[in-house]
Structure formats: structure tokens, C-alpha cells
Length: 372
Image 1 (cartoon, one colour):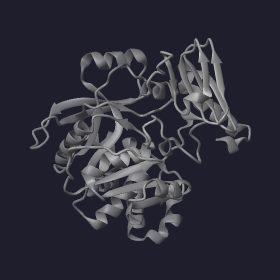
Image 2 (spheres, rainbow, N blue to C red):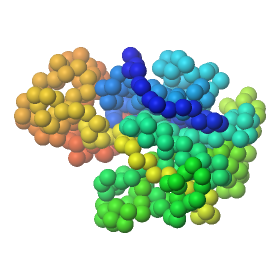
Image 3 (cartoon, rainbow, N blue to C red):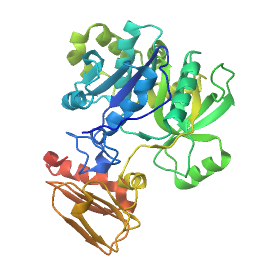
Image 4 (cartoon, rainbow, N blue to C red):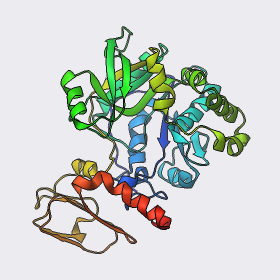
């Protein structure tokens, strides 16, 4: 995959290590995204690089070579192929998925041994982020707050009443040098219904929780030891004795970092937020993907990701992904989603895009895991 050069006026941040959790199978983007080839390995925007490569390019000016990727064993080879600059010592292969806390925590435990003062920034491999200079400035503020002992989350300023994201309630401002926009976090809120989400936006006190965290590695693990001591001990044991990974990993708690550390730490005043005033999308489904793609010049409202010459469309709006080499023809349909792959074809509407995961569940239940 050819990668595009990116110009950025940024400089490395002393002591910052980026941790890229590269997991999940992107089931709402099936059949393009599969467990064997998840969305972070794909070019989902037509930019010429995969989401993983774009994440690397965004973080490298801030961290230099201090980037660690945590991926499943199944995807480790593909990660190496896509990121030839990644030092082999900085690729952590999980034997099986155990949730974001184990993935990020193991990276933190390894980095804690290398540098007790290390600050880690965890940034997912499959998000689309714009305005790199704005992003970089936000990360710099987050690092300043992290040095003060906080777990820092980067909150995205909401643009509509989303029901698919968790929310962060913003508290009082912090007075920390280098972080003029830092605030305490009052609480994390689970995914709300639309009425509640609309109320959140009206108050101006809430940000979307994008799962981006910046924290000193030792602070993260010490907090984890307070809330989940066995998990913290297991991660530190593995970091000290890597040969024990296969033996200890299956027994670790399967929990997200939000539930394991962020939420309980917020309750005791240890979490801060820096607002992210950059465009952000988690590319969670085909409706989201469609919002990132430009319209076809001759067909307003129609988006195509892939070889446009393979799509024959008339009086049609929506998203079409031709991926099998054959022609896809669509006539007289609005807000359609068509995904054509060599072994499976998806046809739905953008309004049902969130429900695609149910088809993956159905395939698994009927013994067709070969397609998932």
C-alpha cells in the first residue's frame, strides 16, 4: 500500500511513548473488515494508507521512534508489513483478546521497566483524525497534565447527539502550566439515548469519550493496582518475565480501561480532560464511513470506496464498496450500502448500518465463522 507524505510543523515531546492498541474486528464494517483482516489494516478513506499507517504517521512527529503497537498474534505479521519502521521490540503480540486494559496495561508495564518516568499516550489504530497541528497541541497539553499525576482523557467536542459514544462530564478547570484547557473530569457516562444526548449538548458540559488516554505508565499501573490488584500484578509479572506471557495471559481479567481505571479514578478526582478541537471519527459503521468520503462528481449523494469504474449507478445515493473485481450495478435506491467482496455481498441501508454486527453474530451461530 503506497503511503502519502504528510507535512507537519511538530516536534517530539520529551518522554512521551505512543501506544497503539490495534485490536477488534470491526464487525459493523463486515464483510470488508474481518477478524483475519480488521479495519485498521484497510484504507478506509481513499487516502492511500491504512488507518494503522495514518495513526503511525500522525504520532511519529510527536514521539519519534517511541511508538509501541499492541496487536493480536494473528495480525502481527500484517502490522510488521505495514509499519517497517516499527522496532521489533515495540510490537507486542497478544495471544488472545483480553480487552483494552490488558493491552494498554502490558505496554505500560513494559515501558515502566524501561523508563519509570515514561508518559504513555494510548491512541486507537482505527480512528480518523484531522487537523494534525491541533491534535499535536492537544497531546502536549495532555502530557503536561499527566506529569501532574492525572489520567488524562482527550474529549471530543460533540457535534450532534450521538448515541453510540460514551460521554465525559467536564468539571472545574485545572491550573497546570502548559495546559490552559485542562479540566477535572466529574464522571463518565455510558452511551445515552437520543433525548439524553441532546440534553448533554445543550449544557455544553460534556465531551465524547474517544478512548484516548495520556498518563504516566507508573500512575496507570498503580491506580490499576488499587482497583484490580491481580490484573496489575499479572501485567507487571509478564513485563518482567516475558516467557510467562502464554501461561498468565488467559487468566487476566477481560475489561476495558474505561471501566478498570478511568471511571473509578474519576470518582476520586484523579482524571482530567483536555478538549480535542479537531475532527474525529471512529469509522464505526458504513454510515460513518460514508460521511468521510467525497461524493462522486457526477452523482451527488453517492460515495464510492474502491475502483469507481466498477460501479454502475443511476438515481442512487449511499455508499458502494466494490471489492471483488466485478461490476456492481445499483438503480433507483436511496441511502443504500453495498459492499461486494469475493466471498460475500452486503446490501443494507445507511439507517441500518449499526445493525451489521448482527449478521456477523448470525454467521457465527450458524457455523459460518469462515466468513467472519
